Image (tube, rainbow, N blue to C red; front, side, top):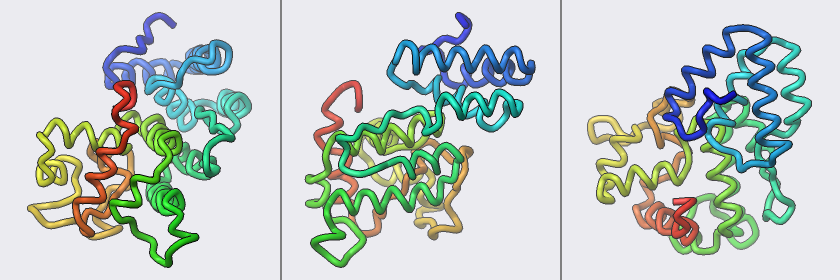
Length: 230
């Protein structure tokens, strides 16, 4: 499918994929074959385009195509390596279904577990010193899962890019990602947007009310020093 350019703007990609999906079985089958060829046969790195195709086939394809999609990608698009500290399949399952609120809660649990808070302390929030212990591979996978299943809208790296584009101005970041309204932080959970229509960087949440040091430590984690991840 030469007309699906992996380097094209994601809105352009989305428009093309939606047109193919609505064309019926033949188009949907072609999209599925394209996805299988890239991700299974060629074992290409999973990109936003793959996430878009997977999402639209998952939610909009005919039953036969969806059954085949689930057969080929029974656990999703991301290969969750056994070397990771935790099993992130439950998070992948939630993100595939776009259950973003539960995915957000689970992500916070993973972050606390990565800092060994469940073993060392009786608290469920993070200090900036906890961030230093996050394994890069695990943080990368958490971020990748959010990005791939959100059309590259959500994830820590997305939030960080917006922060950097605003010269590290926190007030501008909160406004752009929709974490405050008229300078007042949103109330959790009712005022947050738990759908794909949320602003870029809106999810996952991070409790900035406990101070900026924690989220600043996350944005300055060594993982982002790799240009391919930052």
